[in-house]
Picture (cartoon, one colour):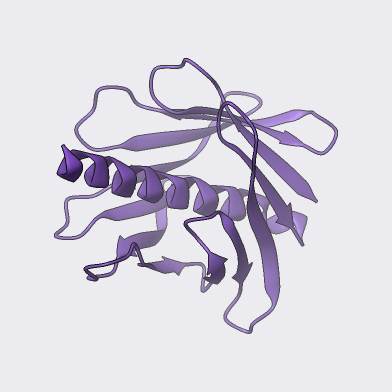
Length: 164
């Protein structure tokens, strides 16, 4: 199954709509605006909150993934000077591929393929495709993709601040 994440243009904070391959909206993603720590909420089509990705106070950038009120994983920047590598502690999964280019695969601890995540090019706003092998992993793959996007946005913001 495929999910399509489409960022909304001209919204305050990050706003995404998530569709299935039939153009049915399944999820809505909204970041809180003007908060010190970043909080990104994921809602279903009934506007019920399913999860939150939020930044944490930490020496290195860190995001927690919370689903239905329970912390289920983290993404933490590795201490490196030259690139943006991070560690994923989430559902026993790991990722391989080009994270900065948004073309990577997710595997479970037994090396079984879970999903492929890619960024669609040539759009005014960010568009991502999540090709998920099993429907029961849908919310978890979406949450991981949103957390990686939040991490990448914070790394880009930090790099831009350092250059000015």
